[in-house]
Length: 326
Ligand code: SF4
Ligand code: MG
Image 1: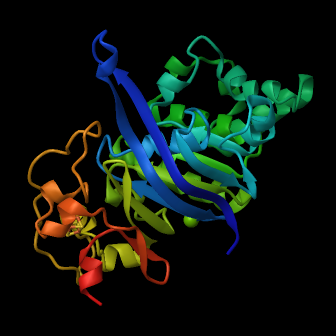
Image 2: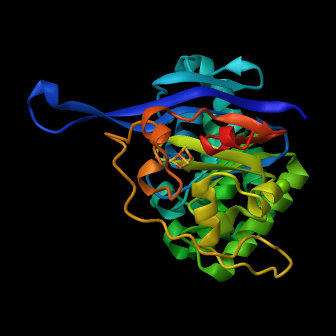
């Protein structure tokens, strides 16, 4: 397995200034010390409740946000600290698909120009070649060249997401960050988009980071899955193992909340209800950030932050219960 992207101790803090008094400056610890790898050609799912830092992680990887700390190593190059000029070739190789394609598409541009814009930015094609490429991309995502002269508002949500995907594909990227690409779509459309993303992955050898708020949405597309809670990665494993043998109490709770469609899965069926709200990422709990909602919380959980450790091959967990098992 070849690593395409490695994230080491990534941090993204946002400054918030509540009043005019300078000492009121505080920080939202949106992503705090997150490390993982993404292998070439795979899909890594990233899940967690809203505000857990999954989208911020995606946006920081593509440098839409400046990282506060840590390293982002893409195909051997540390891109986290690069200047905009140095980043340019990487901007072509890493693309993003957004949750709300309508908000991310320029509504005053034709679909053809929306898809052609990345070609212009990177000087990849002009004139007839550009036109041809736009038509090709439209057809590749199940639309037609007739659509090139239309505007985003003339399309359904699912079609707009296809336009967003065509735009991302225009520059022949290696890696696409899919930020909740199906969350806003009707259930009937979701599977179509997921299937299309999988076909495109196979045809073009793409690597995906697939962000979702719900484990059921990433199940089919992900080779491996990472679970985030309050800015931390708490568990990371191959999908099958994560579904059948979740080790972190938070993952167990998330999984127990989704119905089991497959009767052969002998997962513990007891439903774990998560008590209380997600605490504020401005002032997260000491020790383990999940402890205020964890049914297994012990004294040590308030004092020491559990290390994100490989507890079995390719299965990482951050929980003090893992130490007790040995
Ligand atoms: Fe629960 Fe403690 Fe494990 Fe955190 S470290 S998940 S509080 S048992
Ligand atoms: Mg796949």
